[in-house]
Length: 92
Image (cartoon, rainbow, N blue to C red; front, side):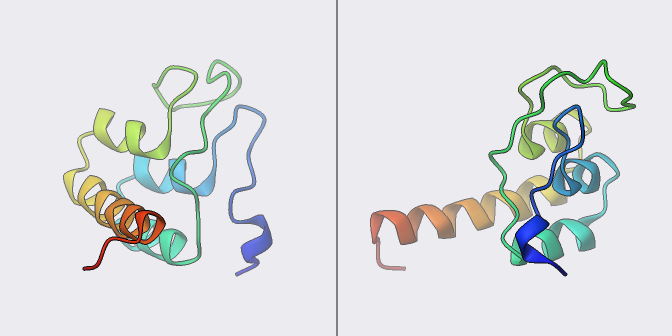
């Protein structure tokens, strides 16, 4: 995997993590998160060639919530908590 491109965006701002979340692919979500994919990347204009029904400004976490993929939400939130703890230097 070319980690340098892990957050590459389509014309509408969708990333691989957005698409994995929308499609309910927990395995892909975990691989992308392990590779450093950002959960904070926002979409721009989903009217531009997209089957994703989410408003502009949606993050992968938003689209996972909108599509009801609870296991994906849990995986993303677990990674977020670990990142937050590291950033705030909170002992585990």
